[in-house]
Image (cartoon, rainbow, N blue to C red):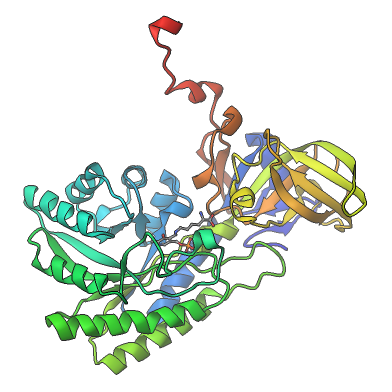
Length: 440
Ligand code: LLP
């Protein structure tokens, strides 16, 4: 499987963004996150054009939690995107990446007082309010600053997205948002309309992530448009914004066939426009918040292969060949967390036939399996393994487990490679450590 600008070059090496992956590994070291900038640009454009065409007045907010560093924010700013941030750290990164706060949405089920203050002080576009406590706190914070903060109310439409239970967020039993069915969402809307420090502009939902089927969207759409109608009927207010969140799945394996961005835009827009017409509403401005489907397939992690070890296994009886790579759990926790599956190529033998069975594991003090079963060409120590579709929720969820230093990140574009995050050093690992006198 080749994604985005990936191709096999004349040297039988994997090439991404016009750069030879084996040369990237030599120049920047491994593990290395390589990001295909052209594919990110293409995905942003596809989202914007598809929703403009299918729905009309709309905006696309990239969900920063998938992968946020200054260069990503600067790229999103250049592409005229909106940005979803979910913490002071993400907001700060975005500000330092020259992203205009007016085009940010601030999310989270527990925003601290410091975060609410930051959002108000910087004039964040919308705070997406998740609880009654936050509603009162935000109104008071904005009032004290002499401002009125535009907000959306996060609603829970009670839709089952049929994805991994840990990334399914819009079901009724969820810590996120206000439940529409039990009346909490309407109570929040009414409370927001009374509070002087907030300006209620719309409603929001996010049903889940890595969705490989569009049904959850078309189920959530009428719930949200009916709720907009109910708000108008009960309060006389027609809200101008409707945010349907993110969630579109990506291709991790050759056999994955996620809906395309165009298909999502068509189905979701049709369902929303139908609901809007039936309710006799003025069409609200539509927001969507894709994260994974913007950056996921654009990321490839390069590793150097260490020991290749054949072991006899009892169940089923036979042999397993472990390929150890110089990263693992700390740069990609998703296999351990969600049983996530990945594809890979041997970057220095990219066109060779994958005919041998391997298990790829990391080098942490854990079972640390990155890819339980994969067919690859013959793998030898020193080869460069390229694990694909690692652009989302890899760097952003990376850790220093076992005191591993976090990898560097390189953007590749049109034959040029730019370092956008340098590799951590051993001293970086110590930068927050303190030794009390008693122990010095
Ligand atoms: N909007 C909100 C409010 C969200 O909570 C999320 C993701 C998104 C948008 C973007 O969703 P996406 O388009 O990326 O599916 N760590 C997990 C994924 C957690 C998703 C959390 N929320 C993973 O690695 O699969």
